[in-house]
Length: 220
Ligand code: DX5
Ligand code: ZN
Image (cartoon, rainbow, N blue to C red; front, side, top):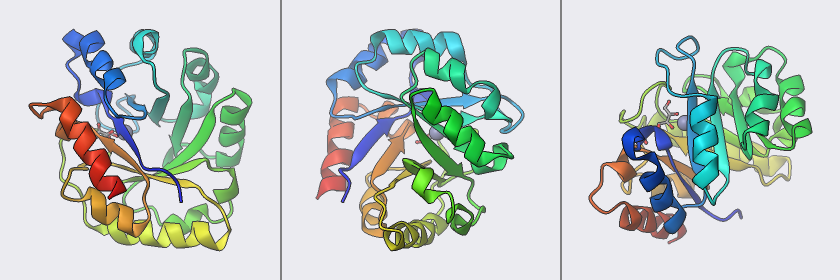
């Protein structure tokens, strides 16, 4: 069984105080930084790009989990690796030659993961699973933080964990969107082990405590 990881989503940080928020994550029990890259095409929003990620990398003492919500991510893999991505996830829906893109990520020295939108069946990953360090299941429609968690996610996690077990793998299952102290335990029970949380952490009064609580519930 994989250890349970918490990845605060920097999308919800205060960009005018980014260094302060990065240092908060460094000091906390969080495991990774979750970095959302949006291009205004694949999703209807634009977030940030290379210079901001470089600035984050300069201060971060934990791995960068880079979630690419961009069309044809294969165009930028080497660049994201060069500026310090440790894990790169690409959407199944965004790249035609998924196997080639995952190989590109590995060759660039990063861990490779695939993301599925809410309605993409988990079964599409059956053949490619051995090549995935992680599968990220969206629990919202990607593009914005602060949305409501979709309950259909639980069933999808159970199905995916079954597939992973059948193949004798230990692939991580990451959940992204609307994760809080109210759903994290049920997600663990379903078979997820890696949790992105944006607004729930950054909008709370004591962010370090909120991260600690999430981690404690996930491990309980
Ligand atoms: C949305 C992003 C998420 C987002 C999650 O497309 O992929 O990582 O920051 O934010 P919350 O936790 O607020 O739903
Ligand atoms: Zn994300």
